[in-house]
Length: 583
Image (cartoon, rainbow, N blue to C red; front, side, top):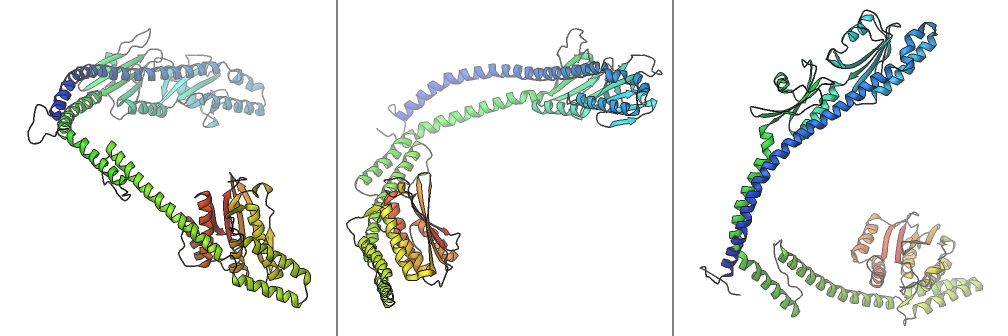
């Protein structure tokens, strides 16, 4: 590939790419301008339709709720207990009257729960001077209260009535225009102006508009989503009074677009006022981003054209150089970079590959060294002079008291112990053999310490005896218990061995009740098992770490030893191995 430096040439690939890119982008850009203009017009239409649909939806919703409340009033006005209470009260006992009023209160509560727009349901019985409310209960009333309510029936030129800033659906039985004569009862549903305003506000927030709801021919009741109420009289004058079905009306004023719907049946006017800025905001933003995209496209074309020859060859050269050095055996090579593109990914994967290769080589080397060290320590600890001396001294003491039976048992255990320890031909044995050897060692120590030591050994399931494990992994842990936890106990020493299988893993728990375990020692053990290192030159930690490393070399990082404080009070070492018959 030929680089171009200093001046443009006709055979420059950068020049050719720039010309080709411009020839491709210009027709597409011209088409995009046409599409943008058409889309802007369509978006304007769709935004206006969305506001119309929103207003129409709320109108249908409100009309449905008002018709349902009207139907409830008409339905319960023919309810027998309500309609006959005033005539039957004269022959009813006081208890029966009270019971009937309570039943009516329950029905009023059911009516109130039928719609969120109902704030209360009232029932007046003028003959009894009683008022039943779904929210206030039963109380006595004066005649002025029901007469004032009855006088407002239909005062909004429809089914709705208006009294003391409240809207009602009223029904009296029998219907009588003479308000001085008491009816049998009056049933009324009081609308919640707060709920109506809250619904208007919710609808207004979603569309950025102000919505107003007014009732009556003269707009006696006005509920708005905001404090700035538009001129209802002006909008009402622009809205036709259709007898068939409500029609959407549009009206443009200074900087505002208004929509209105008039419902003849319930005599309410629903209006929505949207500022021109709100309608045009999406279009202006769209145009702004189009200009930004135009400028950015030109800049990108120039930058792309001048830098393309550097953005491919140079990173490839660095990558090829890295591979060549790796082929020559340099595993410490690292390609520094701050790229976030495909070459950045290749560099990161190359560095990760070299790092992983280096780690694998180092781990393999260290694993071999640790295996050799573990085997060496194992050979060195096969016959410990101190253990042999203690054993011979124990035999001497038993011979002095002529305990021949115990001597025979003790020497038999010693024979099994040294026969197992001197068998160097096998690096791996079955878990059953390993546990038997550890129990032989524990039995020898039990004879030495006598009643001062109590062994609590759980029997191992035969299914786990065939698991293949490294040789001499359990005895060093048991030896650690006797040496550091139980040797100085005068009485009450406990060694407990138990087993637990879970999700394909077998855990062997070796616990003691020693009182020498400090938090510092326990933390050192936990850290050592996690990092496979030991902080101090402690024989206790070193021996356990060797066992832990041998198990991890054999089975993997998820196995090995873990340490925690035992429920007995001392140390609990958990040996984790695969819970299957063979590995």
